[in-house]
Length: 327
Image (cartoon, rainbow, N blue to C red):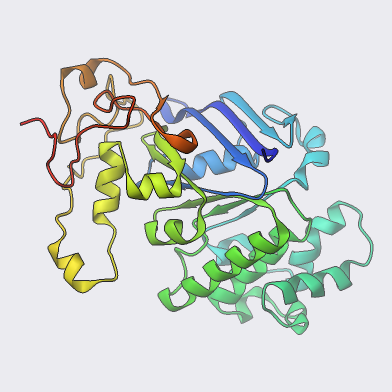
């Protein structure tokens, strides 16, 4: 079995009364891609920032390459920084406009006191499909896709074991998104790093991810192999997300009936009792409103779900077709 690049146990992140992340447990094997999906406001990006320790978690444990980094100081974190990197959603906001591209990409190596930085910067730029001469330019001289390639080059130049990609294509033109996804897939295959891919784009998830974790209002409701999540989603929220994702076949798209959920996402300041999804779930019963569902394994590959209505064999209501739905 592959070694773990990341182990998150019962992660909690509160901002005062806001319970942004509330008990997330997640593991990523070396060389695999795990997609973290969910609506805006579900806590996905907060999980990513806790993992790279841009935020110090309120509770729980974050382990990178077997080292507990949950509450290390900035000085104590330095030896572990090379093990994890992050690519942000907006490349224009994450690149210092006062620095050249070469200085931006080489900055991690300077902090690690490495030698031959200019040579390694040129290699890193070539790896992401940019000419070495781009090192002399400023971020504002580049297109959005080029800036994101610079961000990826900077993130990978220190050869991290784990890359957190926080919606890396959502700020890009549609025509550019596919090329950046292809680049990430090629780099992950060639370099063998683990990747937490945070996104709401399910088509990208199906293309890139090995495993999928579905997040709702600060908690994971379902996780497992990509084939299981897309082929046999168990949680009503996962089913609703998949029903809303477009498919390439126009006839199939017209025939689909998306699951309609209320658009009033409950507040993370005062989340609902019991299952947090029950206020929008079309099949919720009384138990859902009062008892918190515990995650349990329901199938092969560690497929887990936190839902009272799904049995140990993975059988439960299918809100997409109406089968087994309470009336």
